[in-house]
Length: 176
View 1 (cartoon, rainbow, N blue to C red):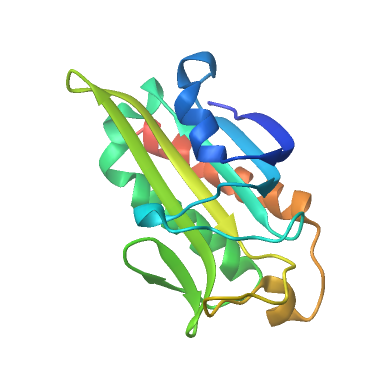
View 2 (cartoon, helix red, strand yellow):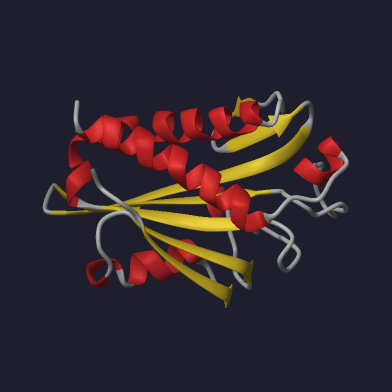
C-alpha cells in the first residue's frame, strides 16, 4: 500500500507549480496543501481565486507507481470527489473540462498536468480546489459547502477525508 507524504503551508504561489518545479525531490504520492495561493490557477491559466483559509487547496504528485494508470487519473479523481460530496449528501455534476458544479454554481475545480521525457512519464500533478467555507464569490457563479449545508466545516478534516478516499482509489488502481 502506498501512503501519502503530506506537506502543509500557510501560503504558496501555487501548489501545482511547487510540485512541478521540485517533483524530483518529492516521493511518489506527495500532497501539498495550503491555506492560500497567490497565483492559483485553473485550466487555460484562468485564475483560481480563494479567500485565505476558507477553502481546501491542494495538489497531489504521482510518479513511477502510477505510470500505467495515467489514462484513468481524471476518472479516479472525479470518482474520489463524487464519493466525497456524496458523503455530505451534496449532489454534484461534472462540467468539462475540469469543474464540479452544484446546479449552476462551481464548488470544485481540478487541474491535471503531466510531464513526459522521451516518452516516459515524469509526473502527474492533480490540483484541486474545493469551496468549503467561503460565502461570497466575485466574478463567477460559485457556491461552498458552508452555504449549502448552513454550517462551517473543519478544512483539515475535509482534507483528511478526501486524501483517505484518494489513497484507497489509487492503491486499488495500481494493484489492478
